[in-house]
Amino acid sequence: MIVDDDTILLNSIVSFLTLEGFIIYSANNVYDSLVYLKCNKPDLIITDIMMQQLDGYDFLNILNDNHDLYDIPIILLTAKGFTSDRIKGYDLGCNGYLTKPFSSDELLAMINNIFSNLILLKGNNKENIKFSISNSYMNRLKSLTYREETILNFVIKGFTNKEIASHLNLSISNVEKYVSRLLSKTKTRNRTELVNFILNSN
Image 1 (cartoon, rainbow, N blue to C red):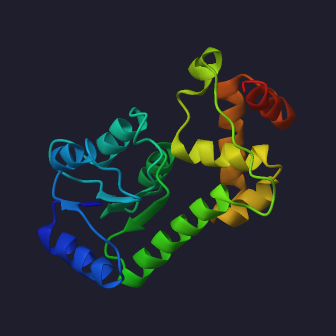
Image 2 (cartoon, one colour; image 1 turned 90 degrees about the vertical axis):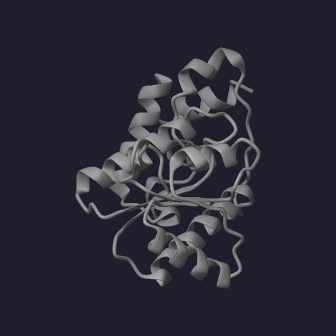
Image 3 (tube, rainbow, N blue to C red; image 1 turned 30 degrees about the vertical axis):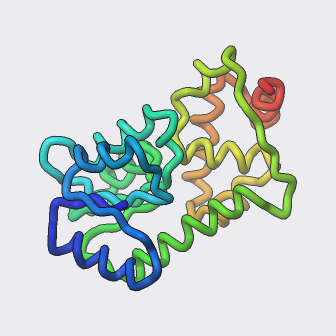
């Protein structure tokens, strides 16, 4: 799914990705996107940030609050290149951030990287641990963003911060920040307690 109120750019991205073999649904505002999402779940959402009424950040907040949609990977597009804007996007759980103007090849590379990471999470050469959270633990985990859940899965599998950073194309310092947030949100003191907390919730 692609959401952008710039019709020219929207049509350009749709045409390019269609030629690359993707099936695309497009919309020029968040409201139309939400109507589509009531009955459909795309593999990826590419959305502009600066839009009328509801912007890209509003869109991410809505997705994060929806149990059926919170785990959809998100790429943010924006004409704003400030570090604070990127941090806000990542804090809300976006998987990638492109500043306009950007090349189609860069967008395609980011998409392929996201899908590769999803495949990695579903079937890794290390043991793929699946877990479900019981109701008694939900309040301590319901605020996790998609990115935090991704980091959590790697932590449970025994990956180091350096390994996680390499797999997700993040800096080690960013991974450390995400792990710190996980410890804070789960009220655990270290990675061992964090893993035990999750495994004991089965």
